[in-house]
Image (cartoon, rainbow, N blue to C red; front, side):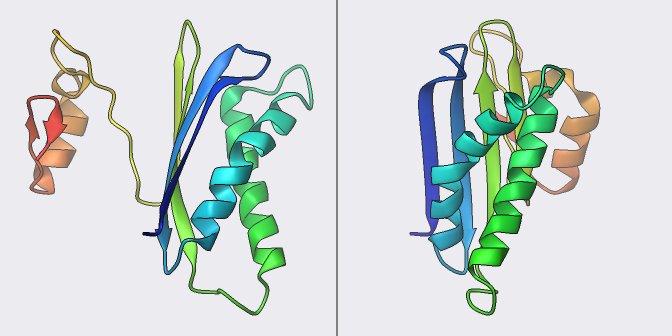
Length: 138
């Protein structure tokens, strides 16, 4: 199994929760590295200045993890990598970030799905021969 995940129930001084899934490619070491480090890097960058946004902090965390991984594994493990999908859940908002070909879908119970409301995204997905069905992708 090459996939890893990380859940931190109280991140950033108990302000948000962190959820992440890493889809390892060619081995699990890059996914394991990211599962153990992305949330720490995010927190470092988020607290590095008063104007650092969630989006900027997670983008910098992805880039820093990639750089550190490449530096630590120079000349070996060159075919190993990972995708990442990260969700930061605040009381008043949800921030979703991804790198690679992994994606996240926001769904609602007892309401029309977000996907149903986003005609462009629904068309893009159906164009790839996937179909939204009962809050899932079939």
